[in-house]
Image (cartoon, rainbow, N blue to C red):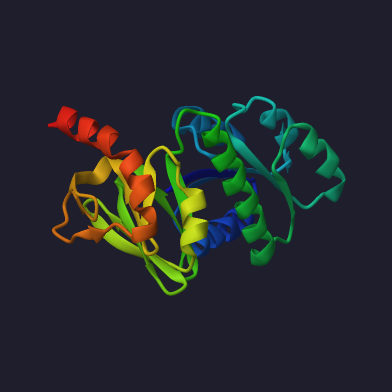
Length: 239
C-alpha cells in the first residue's frame, strides 16, 4: 500500500485526487485543505508521496516543499503553469496542471513508483514490487512471496497467508523485478523465494505453507546445485 498526503485549499481538487487514487489502486491517501494540518500529518506519518498545491492563500507550496524530507516523492498540483520550473528546483518528480485528467495523473504515479523503487534499491534490499492486477496497481511485499508460476502471458504470485495475485507480465519481466539474492528461477515456469524453501532435492522443491512440489527444470539443475549447499546450511540453521 502506497501512503500519500494531498494538500490543496480547494476541496474539489482534493476530491479529484482522491478519486484518481482510488481508481489507480492500492493507495492510501489523506487529504487536507489546511496546509498547517497537512504538514503536521506528513511529519507524523512519513508518506511516500505528497501531492501539493502551490498557491494556497497565506501559504506557498514551494516554501512548504523545501521543508519536506528528501525521501518524500513530491508531485505539484496547480493551475499556474509558470511555477513548473520552480517546482523542479525543489526536486518535484512531476507537475500536474489543473484541471488534472486521469491519464496524466497515471503517468505521474508511474514516475513516482519508479522513483520510490530506485530509492529502495539504494538500501540493503528491495522491500516491495508493484504489479498491474486487472485495472489497478498492487504493491506486494517481497517478503510475503513464496513462489511465482507462469501461466501464458500472466504470472501467479503465491503469498504467505494472503490471496494469490494474477498479473499480466512475463516471467522474464517478473524475474527482473525481484532481488537476485532472494529469488531463484528453478524452472521455465517457476521462480522460488529462497527464504520460503522448506525441503528440496535436485529435481523437486517444497516451500513453506504449501504441499505442492515445485519442479526443478533440466536446464536449471546445474545452477541450482551451485546454491544447494548454501540452502542446506540456511535451512538447518533456521530449524
